Length: 276
Image (cartoon, rainbow, N blue to C red; front, side, top):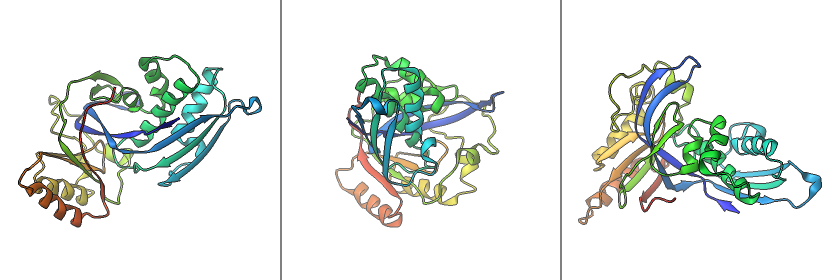
């Protein structure tokens, strides 16, 4: 079977507090973006001699970790150890979502691997059960099991689906060549006691001074007519929302923007109906 692990963006992000375990509680809204996705093909290997083994091949963007540290393989190992009906699989993977981008690509890959195993081996797990299975692999992994707009609390794992109408809204994603590690983004972040505001990403205050190009991209998106622009997650991707302009002014402004950041544009797409 073939799946297309998509990315996400954050509408607002407030860092609430630092926990005793070293993690931070936060508030944010996760929104799936289906237009930018990886490609994951998973097939059963019908050979009892290869029980609990995974054959893995990857192309596209190079994954910056050892094969066994890839979240797809970690997901397989974790679930195969728990569910004896899971047999050997062959995985072919193409990476399109960049790293250090604030788009949750690795978490989406792990969640979609769990979805594939659940279907291929008829585990019968509900989405709530699958979310619990992938939670140890990454705080935002559970979101990609549901893959619909959600208000998130805790470390990003306490999810409440929300109604969000973005149908017909044009989204542009731009990522500079430089990435932002999660560790770097949290370094110096101060908890924010103010109420959650979906227009404000607390990480911008710490990331923008160190990466002026990210602040510049946000400004240029707003200059081009975006009615909303923000850095996604801990960066470095910035997105802008645009309304359709029958007179073509949006297209003209975006054409200039794309010329300016030609190598950095990841996506220019329009939101449709949310998938269930």
